[in-house]
Structure formats: structure tokens, C-alpha cells
Image (cartoon, rainbow, N blue to C red; front, top):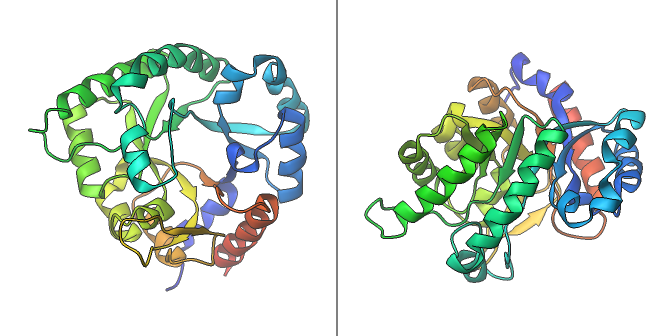
Amino acid sequence: MNIPEQAKSFLSRLAVCSWSLQPTDPAHLVQQLQAIGLTRVQIDLDPFREQPAAWASAAEIFARAGVTLVSGMFRTVGEDYTTLETIRRTGGVVPDGTWDQNWQNLQVTVKNARKLGLPLVMFHAGFLPHDPRDPTFGKLLERIRKIARLFADQGITLCFETGQETAASLVSFLEHLNEPNVAVNFDPANMLLYNNGDPIEALRTIGARVKSCHLKDANVTKTPGTWGDEVPVGTGEVDWPAFFTTMAQINYPGWCCFEREAANQRVADIRAGKQFVEKLLSA
């Protein structure tokens, strides 16, 4: 597949997810970014809440190093990714037992996002009920509406990460939610890791709702009910020419953030993924 000329603009919109690099502090993150060769970041907001002393000077350190924060991310309390079943029980804002703590944490997180000047923040909402008649559907709508409006009050777009439901189910939930500042962070690998449909078809289904994306790759599991395998970008089952072509077709306006959540050579893996994407989009 030939990459359309419009897709080549993504070369200037490459970024890195900070949590993939597991930095100990802002200076360490700067060193890792320099090793990769990128200066734009989707920043993990949790360390700003959990380790405020270590991250208090982040904005100044990033400014001196020429690092730009393009968006943010937060996690929810008690997430357990050991198996698909454990994350189904514990993920996002679905569990009643962690909701109060999540809501308390968000009061701090949204203020930190505002101070950092982030236009967009993404998170995993959890496994969303597919059927509006499901007794948990209304409860999830109410919780996510509260979160959306908390961020809207600060002028911040809130993005759902993809993967834990089909694209059609996600779109249906967003239509019921009907909050103007809510969009989607599209991760093609997650569609494969959760075995929830073809990433390119999912991207077309979600379409203009996509305001943020991850560059991540994976292979579908050969054992139903278990995780697929995350692999470096360009070595898995994501059809990257089709991905970037489709992104251009939907006039995707945002950044393309490399994410790596497996293995122990993440700087090298992300650098290799960057080289793959640069070669693909330069052809």
C-alpha cells in the first residue's frame, strides 16, 4: 500500500509515552528522550501526585531541555493486568471499592494537568457494559460524566483508551455519554492484545472521535481468553501502512505517541520503532 502524502505529516508529530520508559525523575526522562531522539511526550501524571518532591521542577527541566508535553495519562487505583479476567474485575472506574479513592486522586490530577498546560488527558475507563440495559451501564455513565466535567472545567479533553471493548461498543457508550470534551486515544495494539477486532476496521469505526493515539504493536493470542503479545512497533500484526493511511483519511489532528509496556530494553525498542515509522512515512 502506498502511503498518501497527507500521512507524511505524522513524521513531525511523533512523541513518547513517558511511563513506557519508567523514569525515576524528570532529568532521567530527558536523558531517555535524548537517546531515542524525540522531544515530545505524553506524560504520566501519577508521579506528580505520588512523588511531588521528585517531579515539582519537571516543567523547568523540560523547558531547558526543549521537551514539550503534548498530553497526559493517569491510571486508576488497583488495576491488575495479570490476566484478562483480573483487569476486567479491577480496571478503570468500574469497581465500586476503588471509586471513592479514584475520585479523590482525580482532584489532584486535574490540577496538575492544568498547571502543566495539557490540552488532553487519557485513561482506561475499564470494561464498559455493552448493553444500555445492563444495571452497571447507568452507574458507569454517571461516574465518567463526573470525570469528564471535572476535566472540562479546566478546558481539558478526556480520552478513552481503546481495546477493552469493540469499537462499536465504545462508540455506542460515547453516544450515550454525549459529553463534548470526551474523545478517544486509539491504540491499535490493544485491539489485538484484547482480541477485540481488526485495528484498521476499529479505527474507521471510531473515526473523527480519535484525538490521540499510541504507536504500539502486538500479535493476537493463540490461546483464547489470554493476552496477546506486545512487540516492538513494526514487528507485529498491526498493518502500519493501512494504519497511517486511515489516520490521514479521518484527518487525525493529534500526536502519535510511542508506547512500550513489555520487555526491558524500552529505549532501544522505541528507537527502533521510530526508525521503522520514519522509513515507512518517508518512502
